[in-house]
Amino acid sequence: MVIASAPWRGHDPATLIIVLFTGAAALASLTIYLCSRLARRARQSYTPVRAGRDVALAAVAAGIALYLWGLLHILFVEGQEQAEECERQRPEGVPALVGRRGDFLPLRLVCEASNSHDYSVLIPEYINPIVAVLMLLALLSAVASGVLHHRRRTTPRKKG
Image 1 (cartoon, one colour):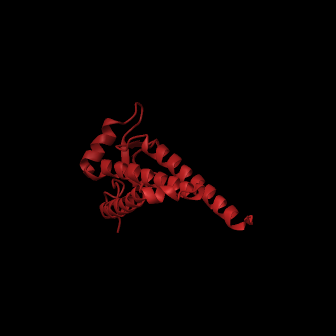
Image 2 (cartoon, helix red, strand yellow):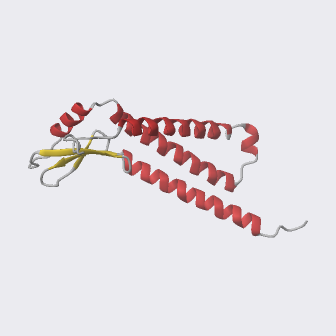
Image 3 (cartoon, helix red, strand yellow):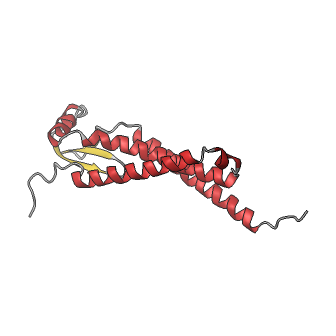
C-alpha cells in the first residue's frame, strides 16, 4: 500500500532518535577517553603512535559532534515547518515542490521540485564538508599511527 504523503517524508523520527542517542554515547565515550589522555602519567608515555591515534580519535569526536549538531537542526522542526522552509527557500525559477526526503549520509533535508531541481534546507551548509574533512583527517592519522606502530614492531632494536 502506498501512502499518499510518502513523497513528503523527511527523516524517519525513530531512526533520527537512535542515531542521536548512539552518536551522543559515542561522543561521550570518546571525550572521556581523550580527557584521560591529558593526565600527567599518560602525557609522559606519549609516543608518535599514540599521538596519531589520539588525533584520529579527536577528529572522529569533532566529526560526531558536528553531525549531531546538524541532526538537532532537524529534530526540533516538525514536518509542516520543514515544508514551509522548503517553500521559503525555493530558488527563483523552480516550479512547484513535489516532495521532501531526508538523507543521513550526507546529512541533509532535500526539497524536490517538479523540474528535478532539488535543494537542501535546514542543515547548515558547513556541516557536511567539515565532517568529511574531519573523517579524512581521522583516516590519515589512523593510517600514519598504524604505519609507525608497524615500523616500531618490525625494526630490530639495537642492543647497547
